[in-house]
Image (tube, one colour):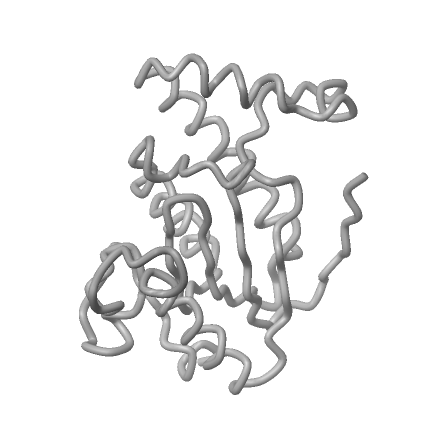
Length: 188
């Protein structure tokens, strides 16, 4: 059973992790990065602010500011995952990855099948943590940006070079795939 905690603070920054089901490298397999950037831009258009992010082959981390007049973070993330799941299934179909698509279909929990869910693209729960001060935000940014060169990953030699991260924005002032809001400017 999935236990969900409601996080309803607004005018707040959250650290969010979204993971592909079974830790499958779905983002890499389907080259899903443009779909994620489209979701980020949708959130930005809705007055949310992306403070930092990294998109790994099978999960993503982001720091997001939720403004005072916004819906709760759980709803923002839940809706994003739902719409990205549709795009993921479409990408799997276009790539003719039938076995993988069938596996995701067979992995849907019974109680979600009743509600019409057809594929288990993401882990059912996302890790969402409130960042209650600047020190936590800086700690999470450091973790996010070093993710591509830590542990088993070694995706690049220098974390600043990883293309699906906000590291180059913070370290070099380089523009990225989306508009990043510096954590110091988020409440302005």
